[in-house]
Image (cartoon, rainbow, N blue to C red; front, side, top):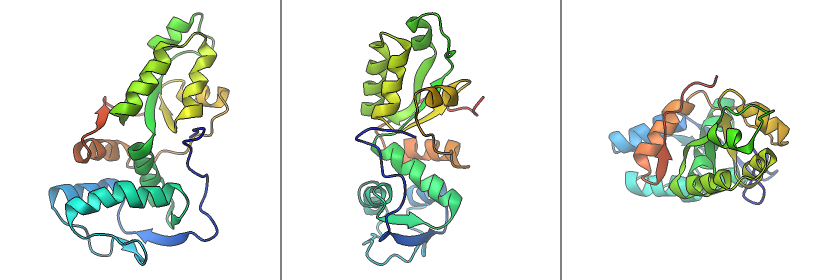
Length: 200
């Protein structure tokens, strides 16, 4: 993942609070949204996180406080897939996007590239910004601006190849990415989503 000024710090700071997440972010969102309860002992320890127990307030806290702390390196998760799950979810809630790229690296025209790139999941505002960037491309190298300005999770036939060409570091997707995308779209009303299939 890459992202110029909007890019979260690469790793936890030395004074980061290390903690354990009992369940992944997709399952957490499902329980809070459908069962209207915040699971007990979800985060351990929870000292200094000021986590609300009311479901509606919890969802706001997760987006604003928790995700900000996680992406800024103030807190870190101790299990690898929980780290990926929450980092992906928080990145999407802030400025991230899942972008499908099927354009060949040696495309003959810029229009060929434009037709093979689409945002499949992002906040509406982020999707509009990236769509405008794609529409205004003048050379195929302009696609690299997307990786410079936003944290991008590339999917599609040539997604990772384009990321490498643009010098972007791509974080691994969490195992629960597809479910997490669906839950984010259900819980938070400002996402635009298209079917995110398995990476080809």
